[in-house]
View (cartoon, one colour):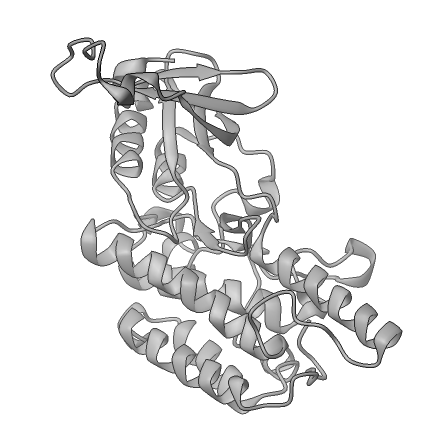
Length: 315
């Protein structure tokens, strides 16, 4: 790995830990009496992701990596380094041990249900009053991460899907793989899960191949709405067993505004949010600021509900 890519000494061990020793800014060795020189290098648990890129897309890969490495936000997965020299190319990222947000919410629902059965009332190992409160609190974190990309870096995520909204060991939501959707358009990146190869992309980006174009900020809104829908309709969830779901959120021909889909959403405010985020015309979709306001309102409403409430159709 090219150390100059991140300006620090890096040692990547085979067990998946990253040790980083800071270099002095002036490039000189620290003085003998400098106490900072005695400090051991920091150790991080990391994930190494492989991505296949064509030779003519290397420069774009470098640009996307540089943009990602510049990110510094609690809801954006940290990139520690990358290498385009290896085949496949490598990305060294912060580890998010609880997998995707949809899987995390599903597993936590079962954990809370088991505790209610055993003790009569669920304990609260996480800082949420109930499932709805957890859902909107966590999606608000994702929305704030997306806001950071859009406003601070003028960057379209371009590959937003449930698998790219992750949760860390301490319950922090992290966005990842932004910009790689754009890279995929140019070099046909080979990803592990071809079912979601380009994320939950807006139909105006893919339905007419002659008009195939890069996604926009409003296309991120559509994709984000699909991620929310993925949690609200477990029967059609991307993680639902294949034998139980003839179609799933993320399928290329999946229509989120079909009556049969919207009927599966119990709450009117949830349904309205999906309708307004996933409108066919980009200019008619909610702005991200409005999405955040609505989610804040739903989180506040959930916070006033009973501790052990659960939704008939959610998760």
